[in-house]
Length: 512
Image (cartoon, rainbow, N blue to C red; front, side, top):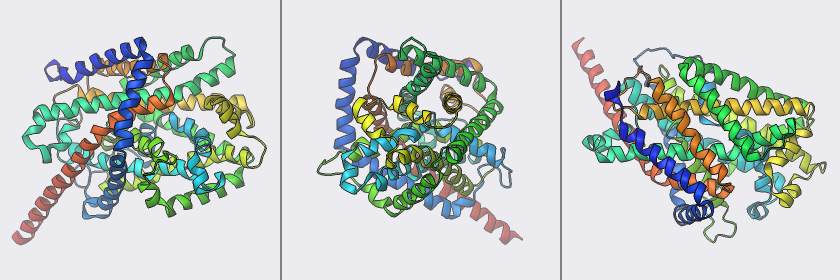
């Protein structure tokens, strides 16, 4: 096993993460300034690149699902799925979305309500609920699902033993896959994975800290509580990962039950049922109606910088998560057809995501629009989203119990999603890893610890939301090129495979 370990992929990211941690600790202001400058170049000046890529990948997912390739089984012909639809969907949803879905579901409409672009389009009621649905639905999950079937085809049909980004590019790169180009792609993938991890943890963890502070009236600082939460979460996902797919599946099921329990409680007992359903229905319709316009809006005159601040950030955010989540989805989709994987992903992944934003977001927006609460003014006054979410929860029945449920659900979300990330990263530590072979526990443990270091550094540096976003946008720029290579390579490889199968079938028929 030792001979199989790819020490370059294992050690170099470790060294770089330690260096970044020291840099964020020692010079937080200077490092944040550098991040902002790089972000301006890749996110503002070259922002159209992210928009084209997002729309292109979504279109590709529809094409693949509807084409003849959709009938291909990710595995042996006639092989049955390894997991039930519910367990499969639960693992897919929870690995693809971390605890930040709850943070943004509660509060994202407030951020849009205070954005000048909403005033340009119309009213808060018309548009504040539309953009969360757009930024978290079809294009983001399109990234996941196209890559998931590409990786699933690579693992379960082609039986490739190198479970890495570079291997998915072999049909295009050829022999260069095993050279420095392939090595560069894999290193880049690991860096992007770590960047996405850091961003996610650093965005949503303070909400958990705020809830704990409210419940237990702790006098210690939010940063200390954040670190304690990170360490607890690390312990949970490490324990789950070391128990294999059975542990991950069990944790995912628990997470789903908690999540939908929370959703149903807010929907039926929050007192805003009619408003939630009607506004959600209208927002979804407006999103579908304006989908192409929203996907291509660049704000050339920079009157509001809306796509630069939001759409481009979100596509980048999902792209860096594409290193781990699609690999995991492709792995657990063994026995399902390509069409089932894509359509099931859109049904379970997008459906569950939309339900979260419709119910949790529209609940507080209903209070805002009826005049009973003014969350927008509160945000403009103090800018503390975490405190506002706490105020939102306090308006609900059994608020303390609900806070505990939100807290546990967020930990479960984090633990499940980081199970998939740590497992994927562990696979990267090997030159060769067969389809059913698992990384050594020591390697898995190392990655579980490594994934938590950069988020802690970012918390200590007290990085702003903008700077945290910058980490994802910068890392996603080169990853977008690799994603394009993977998609082209997959289409080339599956065409070759299909032609061979058809030729074999024709020869068999002629023989008979």
